[in-house]
Length: 499
Image 1 (tube, one colour):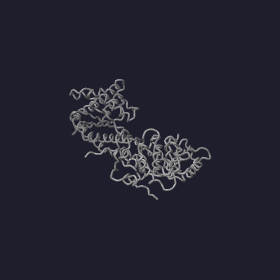
Image 2 (image 1 turned 45 degrees about the horizontal axis):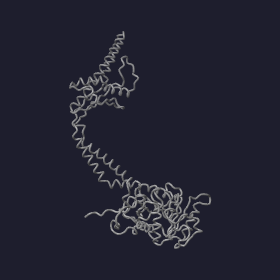
Image 3 (image 1 turned 180 degrees about the vertical axis):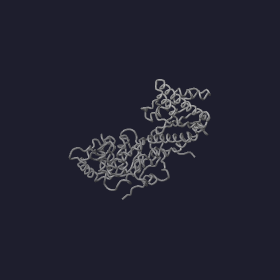
Image 4 (image 1 turned 60 degrees about the horizontal axis):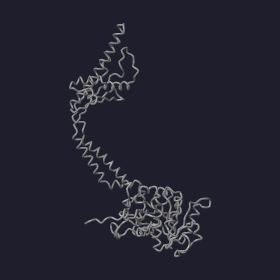
């Protein structure tokens, strides 16, 4: 019994690899780009921030003694305390108070400049108003905050006096007038405490170190996101990425020539290595190999044809079952049209070495082709298909079932029960994360993924014969680990490094 190939050196050794692994791998490969972006952004932010003029921030706090407006006759206002505090914060920022504060400063500061330099905030849980002022000088910032607080206190005191005098003017009762004056004195300006501002000892801005750290982090995150996006959309360049995404070895990377009927002509050696790798990983004995693409454009049919031709060249008897919609293999395998249905092979069974009988490719007596339509009706259930495959494969060395994507084709998904091995096909231009969809379907059916075959466009216009390259690390991987391809094989031949 042949053993399953080891993937040591190809996988991380973890079980159940995450579909996010390809993106993380892309970020890791671009780590120096991420670090460089962070360094450039951090240093640039530090230098630019250091050249900015300094600004200072000072604050004055006012603690209110009243929680409502002054009422000359001693009545209670209808406003609640939180609304009263919010109203006082609005009064602090009113143009009349700001103008009085600008006059208090007497340094030529205009109302507009002061409005831009000060910020008033109120606490919702306490009767405290905070006046913050910024300026290019520490003393000036403190003076601005104190001037606004002083202007507000004066405004409040004058307002209370005005309201009391207006109430006294409309009453003829001396006792009531005395009561109003007494209430005004008790209320005062409504301020319990004014905590004056202190000149700050250091500038609030700029802060070069903080700016550098923030910009460096943002640049690193942006660079990592860009690397992940490019890595997910770019071509597959590393077999390790595929192994981790699929949880199975890469059997080989095969070129596909354009044009019907030429799927394996441009890479017979690559298909031969992949076919050998498939022999290593598939379970021994009878049983079919389900070949399914990640998408409809992965190249499933040309891969099945190439594997069949390679196996036949090695003397194996091959049965190809075309279960895809439209049966594309009928056109890719010349001499097989019209192809018999799978159940018709019982009456059309030929010896492996004879080129007679329908479904045998011309010049390839070891290959037979049958089509499998989607089962329909009470008498064509899964058990019937299983028995048909078992009978048809009784005298075959290899049975390849070409099916559509598991995530798109219910027929392909149903055929999982009949397959002894499952091979996924993915194009080099497709996202390796798409293999996660295949793994999800296989997990639902309780089946493992046997291996992955990568397809790429065959190189054209080369002069002369290409040199045969040795795999990275020396030696051949094709038979030793069941991959049939090194990392470099996935994107075509490399140029030889100059010495």
